[in-house]
Image (cartoon, rainbow, N blue to C red):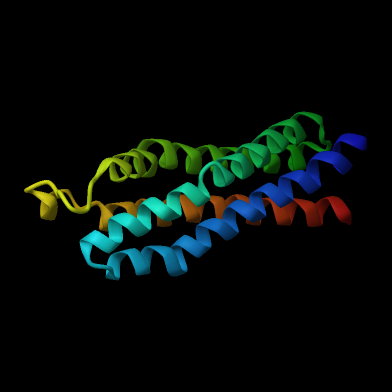
Length: 156
């Protein structure tokens, strides 16, 4: 099937790159940000976000679109269902990103480390951002696992 030969590698690449990028954030980025003094945290967060956006969203969208297309065109139905499950997991990760992490990223982009809000201790989003990042990472890793298992089933 031509669609499978074209879409499956793109789905694997996009999902794998997204999972890898998020794992970098979980294993290194978030612990680093949590350990920094506030002024350095803000500058480092601002620096890192400009490198991961729009790369990460592009990877997730590419994987999502391929998973959806594969769910429509692939037979047997069991494989189509697995592609659909992968797509749902990616939608979940994207929802967490858009509703939780991105608003924090946008707000931090506006914060001047030399003129912190008086209630910074209450507003500091590092722990919250890190927790939501772990949630979206787990969803993307689950989507990748489903995709890999499905690929193995299709290769039999």
